[in-house]
Length: 411
Image (tube, rainbow, N blue to C red):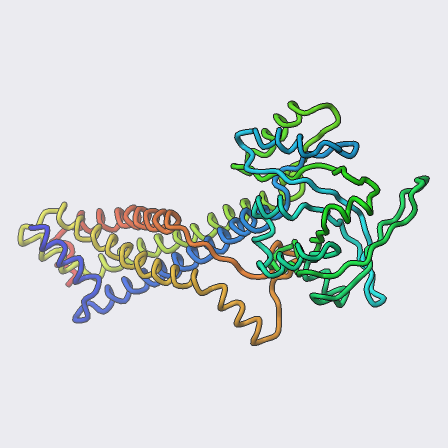
């Protein structure tokens, strides 16, 4: 039997509308099961990839990937920055001061960790450009008493751009320095849609130094790395090269558990949804077995006409492959379209019903991100085709071993 004839018979058993209603209906059910499984798997994996991307590019793009701190304020920090930036894995470094402070406005009080930064160095590293507009950065640079504030902190304090507030730094117990305060103006609001909106607060380095009583000194350095996953090793190497009194902390200490949870959730969800594909593959087994039963007389006639068992076997194997290829193709198209629109769809539902599914005080972002990756789509399709091919082996072998006389006797 020629390959073209085998393919024609397999196609007729899969799609025929005349005299083969049962086989066509069963094939359609199998295809729909695969389409649903692949669509869901692609969309969910894209969402999990989106959380991973937002974590790496947005959150870890603004928070320090690696921080080198000193037990005492660093006076010669320009020299230390030059030394840190000589490391091949360091893209850039910027000085900072950190203050535990209270923010007061119109009777509202909130506490946060205020960071004193050098705007020139931060712009060189490209950190603030990720979450602020050029207009806000320009306004902050032009205001010596300016303040950059997370939008959620501003909401709690009933603040808007241009409003003034009081920043209070309590004096340490037993310290000669009393409580210090400074009147500041909100230059810009950080609205990243991430957890940074809950805690971010930045002032100019001279303002922070005055409030901390460390004029001309800094607490440490914020570093941007070539590979953020090498933060632990780079931190150890840098501290080893610096004078005594320095220590390192990296993003894994503050966000490592969250990143690991995202990766674990992605793997678990992938395994669970792959089980749906496995169920769809088992559905192919049951469908083809029923098709074999329904086509006993056809198989017997083909055998009587001289068609070999191998050709019969090939017909049903190809039918299983057709089901897999068509189902995976349609599922991939729907999954790709769904991945691009899932974020907008969720946002539309939130707007229509006035609800918010994700909030930055619980989740790392306040929106549903999506990052479609071609390798995921290809891997899913490959696994689906292989599983369906394996599922078709048993029905195909059963059809090939069907005795022609026995099948015709029951007709």
